[in-house]
Length: 219
Image 1: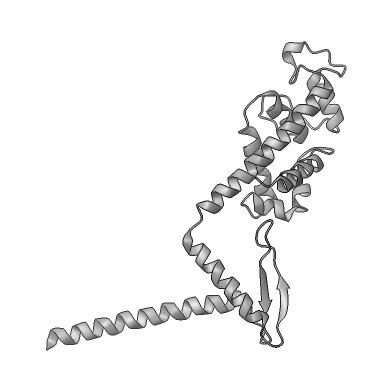
Image 2: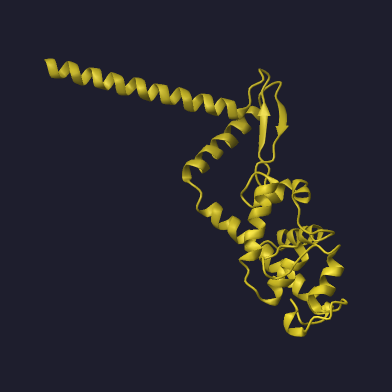
């Protein structure tokens, strides 16, 4: 697994834990991460990430991640509480609540909470990347063929006179490029037109075959 991508995700989770934890406003600034989760909006990304975190179980690492990102399972008492430092104190009983150890989210030291948090972030990053790998492996060959056609037309338009580049982020970390030719059409528009044209040709051939078959039936 790509250690650079794992490291990137861990740093991203650290930024998410600041203040009130995970929010849609923070996610809107991370378009590549949204696409990595296989969704299109910050709202869907938040739901998806929360589902993944809640699926990590209820061990100390999972609890530390939930407390850090403010993702509650509904019964653990996790709330924003003003920041990650205050949340760690609450979880480990270092605040003024006076809760018995048996009622603490993480009955350990604050240092232990930080360690669980770091290991939990690494586990979460690997889970997300593993899901992306499985999603890519199960992708339809038709999609691969279509994307290959886009890349082929990209290369053709690269050498076309008067062409200019238009960049569009379609997936992470890879970026595909759509280029606009001098007449204003993109390679995507060319491909769609080709597909539509091929469909009409196919229909015409089928009708011709049917007419020939009918003629043969009368002779």
